Amino acid sequence: DTEVTQTPKHLVMGMTNKKSLKCEQHMGHRAMYWYKQKAKKPPELMFVYSYEKLSINESVPSRFSPECPNSSLLNLHLHALQPEDSALYLCASSQTSGLQETQYFGPGTRLLVL
Amino acid sequence: RKEVEQDPGPFNVPEGATVAFNCTYSNSASQSFFWYRQDCRKEPKLLMSVYSSGNEDGRFTAQLNRASQYISLLIRDSKLSDSATYLCVVLFSSGTYKYIFGTGTRLKVLA
Image 1 (tube, one colour):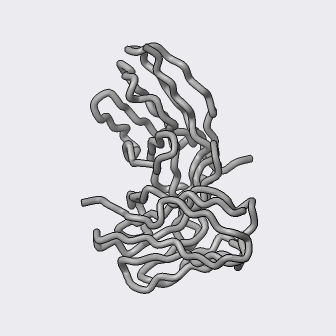
Image 2 (cartoon, helix red, strand yellow):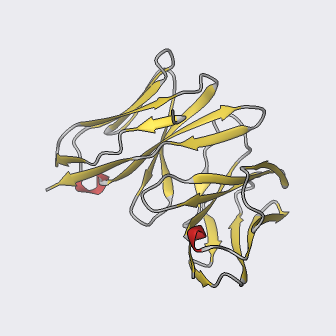
Image 3 (cartoon, helix red, strand yellow):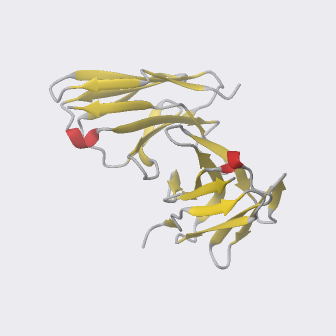
């Protein structure tokens, strides 16, 4: 089973709302990732968690707050977003964050900020 | 210069054609290479890893040229279902490992 699940599939929120995106995997992977993808662009890395610790933050604005409660779960807390934050948010996982590790992606959450 | 570059296409080819995509990368510390496929409004899915010796999986062949810093993907006998965006992905280490995605190449296979 190489499944990464994400909820919700779609989310519409106002600029003053607080919401959370959730990601789950049960493959025993110890690295998890958040990516942002705009239309017709490649995924852009936001955060990497390795063994439940934040190892990479790609200078993401503080209105995006990641959390890794345990090795299977990854959350992305959203607060005071801007319309330009509308995008597909992809979660991925890999066995570790090392060499030759394949990443498996979830189906994504399509976010619209009004 | 972008770290990973691809021709965005689109490549429009007839069914049964052979098509090749190239991808160049700028960081010589790049260590692992992959081709992912992404269908419209779907997540990227691994197509194949790319090894130094080159590797083949059915109709798909991937090659790596470290000296020239490019990787390629060859698709033989194209099917309608091959229509998608093909993403070149490079993993490199700068203390921590990072995956860098190319811009993707759109392929449309025509009946």
